[in-house]
Length: 139
Image 1 (cartoon, rainbow, N blue to C red):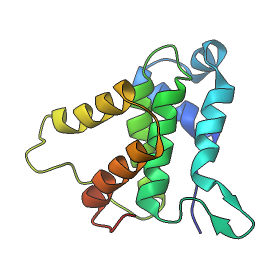
Image 2 (cartoon, rainbow, N blue to C red; image 1 turned 120 degrees about the vertical axis):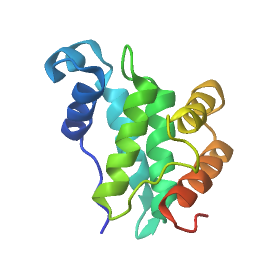
Image 3 (tube, rainbow, N blue to C red; image 1 turned 90 degrees about the vertical axis):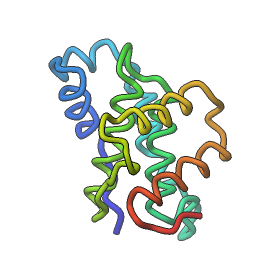
Image 4 (cartoon, helix red, strand yellow; image 1 turned 60 degrees about the horizontal axis):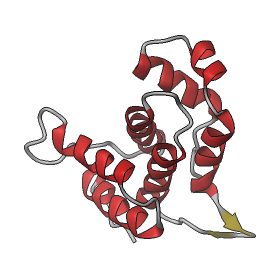
């Protein structure tokens, strides 16, 4: 069973990423946009999941958090950390790309997500990247 992040989980992540109290972050954020992004990986109809594999669910979470822009500042950072936390909660360990000791290659992927369209092609591309980072096959 997949363990999804809650809004409370996300606010704790934001608190750590932004080094500010969650209450302050929540007061100035568009929490409905965060809730929408947090719910997206669980989308389905009946017993059919829209995003059946973990890498794709993680990609949907990251892309939606970055593109929905619920925070005044820190959407890319919080989206990335939320994605890694989601993977950890579901038994996968994030492994940075080879040679990405400073995080610049990973940061560039997230910057590209922010600058590009938040469409299904982006999700597929990010899911493939995540799949390689967690040693999984992605759709």
